[in-house]
Image (tube, rainbow, N blue to C red; front, side, top):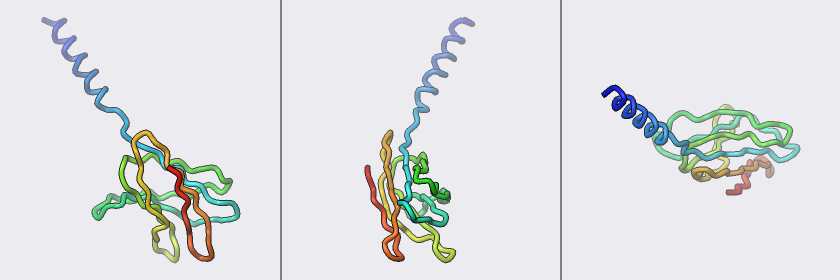
Length: 114
């Protein structure tokens, strides 16, 4: 009987671990040369979205990588104490979305590569 209980517990544990598969994608945010941004934020593009994830882009041109669940997202940048939308993009499971930010006049533009 004891062997049966141990086998049942081990089976349930393996099934629980198999169900914990990571369902995330990655967002790689890069900044074009000669352009420095204040703080950035990534937030789900939904009406009742949870708090946004704030970060600073790396100044050396290497991408800042963020793990996000699949779905639509907005990339925000700070100007005069407010967060403004730079672009929207979709994160897919096990995929990398690369967003390159650049300045055009006073506006921030995004180049998105999915």
